[in-house]
Image 1 (cartoon, one colour):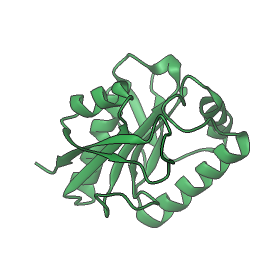
Image 2: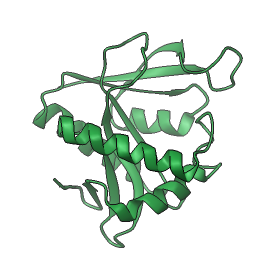
Image 3: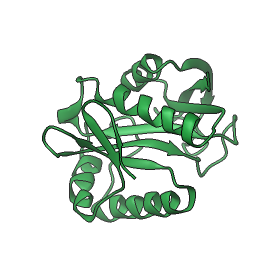
Image 4: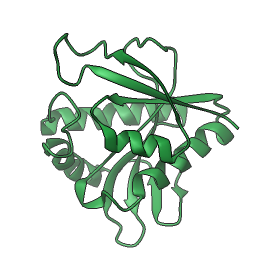
Length: 175
């Protein structure tokens, strides 16, 4: 199922998305707040997992397409984290857009739609988002979509001393 905003289409993944997604995940700039860039095989494996979860849940991390150009931009959507967090169980909202689409308000626009889908269509009562403490661009998106800053924590998948280990959680409840 496709969901639309003024400028975007949130949709299921296509085979043709894999190559631009691999390029996005190989970009040091795009991945600067993640532990590492991804190989094409790792990126493709991520798409496989996203598609499996969407088939089971009906929701997940949708591919984002720019309406005006038809370009694949990245993803936005909802996910159940696969590792235990201090606030688990939870449903998180996340996004990853390629750098040509930064600074245009696309991430908040897509994220607002994903929140709407989660709350209205799937009856979720609370959605969280979390990121490395140094990732102020994502924190700004969280604030723009109405999320409230919560506690800081050490990400369990990152070892002590890792520069991205310290994270912060944001929350929003169905209103």
